Image 1 (cartoon, one colour):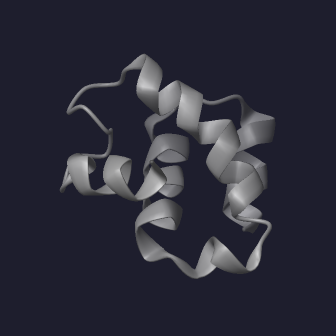
Image 2 (spheres, rainbow, N blue to C red):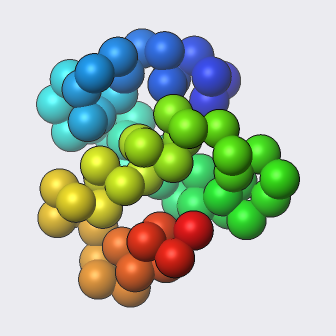
Length: 68
């Protein structure tokens, strides 16, 4: 599912082009994935950085992502 979402995203900072519930659903899931060996997958890390940079996450969530 995550791989499909990252492919769908393309060059957009969000999965469906504009911020959607899909982005907001995947953000916490991927935050946990980033704590595993699978964190090396660049599309997931890029998505989380883009989401944090967009300002839609709380400061705490953005700081946690920045540390990953």
